[in-house]
Amino acid sequence: MARYSDDVSPYAGGTELLLAMKMHFADYQHLVDLKRIPELRTIIRRDDIVSLGALATHATIADDAIISGAVPALGALCSSIANARVRTSGTIGGNLCFAEPRADPPVLLAALDAQLVLKSARGEHHISASQFIIGALETLRAPDELLLRIEIPVTACNIRYERVVFGHRTIAGAAAAIPKDPANKPRIWVGCIGTHPTSLPTTERYISANPASLDDGLTHAIATDIGTLDIVSDEDASADYRRHLAETVTRRAITAAADKKGTP
Image 1 (cartoon, rainbow, N blue to C red):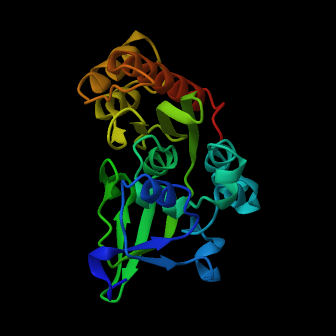
Image 2: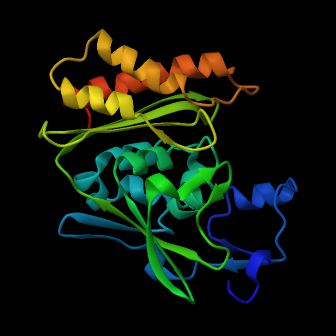
């Protein structure tokens, strides 16, 4: 990666990268094949951290016993991503690093307060999943870095992810992590409506102040947050319709998690 600098890309499942190259949206003279590095596929739990190898496929995550026991919301999401071919070959690390604006895992991982571990010849460092994606197809990963793993804290939260899908692509998605202890802060994130996932701070503050009351005040808080966002209009949904869907799935996710219907 260091040798070829800006003219190289890591390659794993290739479900998005190769398609982008075929359509001339990306052009690299060198691809570094990671598929034969088994250490990048491991899923382990150490105390209250689940360490998820960047090359773990969506299908592997969906079927993994550690994931189903510790962060079942992620397993449930990965079981329904795109189609069987994508789930079998596409990797969680590739999904994050490609930063396709309508990808679901970055939204949920931000709500889960996950940390990403990256490494280059210069050393290793951590970046919060909530800060990693900074725009459409743009992340904080340096050209010579590899994403090694995702570290997910196992916390006492009810977690729910809700989305609306058109074809195989999400047009609005929301993740809610509601702590079982009201003294802890909820994390509410929305995505697939703009260039990158976004937190909803007004909504988080409302839930913290009114943990037992999900009334019209919650609807107003959600609308206030989403009303400030730049929302994409495309062939699948107008900005106004996507805004309406984002408000709807956000309330659904919060209500399900608060009612303890979300997965713990």
